Image (tube, rainbow, N blue to C red; front, side, top):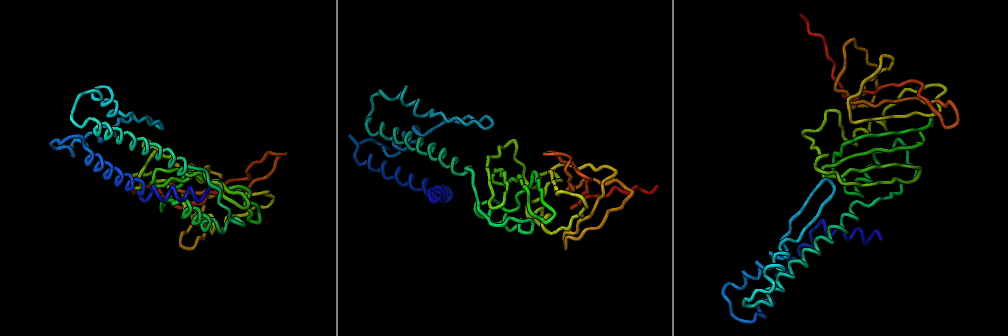
Length: 309
């Protein structure tokens, strides 16, 4: 079945169906012209006009709802079908050709959307923290995700030995797609949905707090987060939003050159922060956990130094 999906994607991404239908329309209109009932001035242009009338539509777009109304064919059927005219038979066929091509296009769009936004399972043996970016490159290639996809959120839980307990992250690319990616021991599950215009942002105007998934996974894979005694597991959390830190939280600066960390000590407020919250977790009871404390690892930030008077 996957080969059929790939074929449908290939046909649409390379506009093969559109090219094929265009060639068919041209040959069919030529066929109609050659089978005209009588000589008529500008008949070729009139056949093209009737075809375009049959294919003319009016589209309604409300959020995720899209409705296509074949206005052109309705006009022909109600007002023009029974009107006496030269070459009425082939003109009717040209109009019907337009509505047929329209229906094929709508049907193809429905099928392609189902294929394009289908759920995926990608098997990768031994998913580990150290290979998160390599795993993502496989996902990226398989799904055709644009470069520099931005992260909406990431939640990672892992054991003391770096074995992943759970991983979920959400990303968006510039093709108006949102990907919900989750991992277990041997595979990734990906759900794709359409990002609608009112949710779309371009990288030139995106929020300051957003970052690309490759950089974030690099930081998580290579940064040596602080470890604690008596912790059952660790949680790392990223959100595409401004972060606020409590006075009892330790802040660490992350060097993106070598992923080393150093404690950030400043008496001035920090702002415009991109950071990862890292929490050692302990068990309170069956199914109940709490964080021992929270450390913040800052990837990008600004310090608001006081102005000298």
